[in-house]
Length: 187
Figure: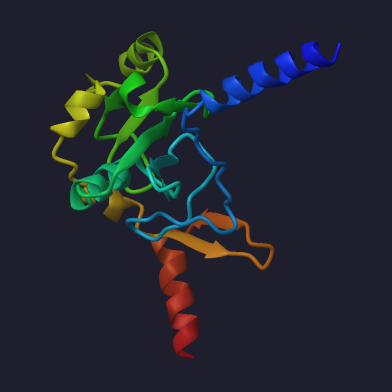
């Protein structure tokens, strides 16, 4: 009986030692900020992350921020890169995802790219969003990563603030409301 228990323990130890697969970390909306733009990272379909060989995980609020950071930090030893499935927020390795670029799709930093765990879902999304382009991870490596400044201007009036509970609060103000608020501050 003792030898059987020892054998099972040995097998479990070997199995645990052989599992070097890097896993994504959970997003903490109260404290996590994008490594590139320093904006809060929501635990949603736009969150991405890089796991470094040294064990550090870096989170981003937009796939564009992750690729911009990667190109500026080419000397970093990356163990894995993750994106989220647009439909169910499941973490996916960057190389396993299919992407859709569409200038009209709103993403946190207006890079306008969303990710999917399978090509069929990406094709379905693209079919319902005119002007979409399907992309692979290798296509992203050659992508220009320009932000859609027109979209950023369009949503410039969107107010981002933090409540005392640490929750991010989003609401849009019309131009009249914004001017009215500015007038009140002057008096």
